[in-house]
Length: 318
Image (tube, rainbow, N blue to C red; front, side, top):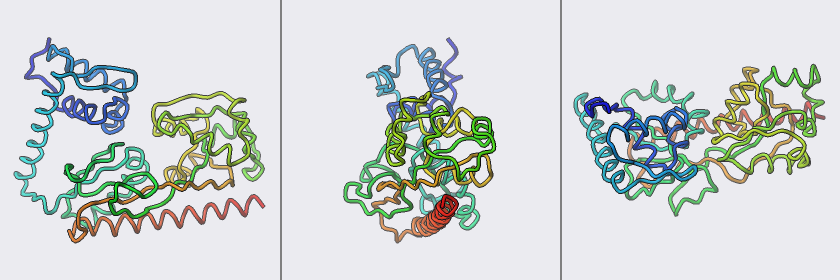
């Protein structure tokens, strides 16, 4: 057993994340590592401590009694470290904006744009947490959240950023390997039967929903499938040329414009659900008001671009 003085700080962060989510996959997405890497880090720390932190059970994990006590103290210690660092650098809470965001939304939409906000408002210090959990604002430390749903979040004020708009995507290379030089306008949903479909355990109904809307439900029973434990992984698999993933158009737009991915179908399948700006605190706080104004403007720009692209696809299909 290694000395406890050699406990890795990143391992403590990973354990805290796994405890908060009750799931190694979601902890991995938050820390940008695989679920397997989370499991290995946890196992290594448990070997050092000589007790089990988690009880494993399928995809879910729960804290043991020893683990609950340990994680509680780890969480307090991590918060003290952050507070000490902020104090040492002269940062006050007044200029710290604490937000919670869904992991895929963060990686595929928010993070590529966030440097613009930082450039415009360098005095605001961002603390971003990625989580699938909807936090109880009365007890959480977050200023705001960006959540997926129908706009009803326990009575909290919410503002729609943009609605979900599903579309199948695959790598340009794979598309041409399977269908040759066929024009995109000549491709129909029926042609998906020639490809592998990439599914996600966190978005289980997306393929069924899109294929049903497109009138091609039979494809599900006539093609191969590969299953991933998150939407993020299915999107990366599509980029890698493993098959077609069905994705929110806003998440994949930059890859489509860069011609890394192909979105050949003019079938427009908007969802009634979408992504919302949610907060319980007064937006009179300058940091929150500025972030809301910025993120709403970015979302409106995204929606306009998507609407124009969908209109263009519809014209091509005529």
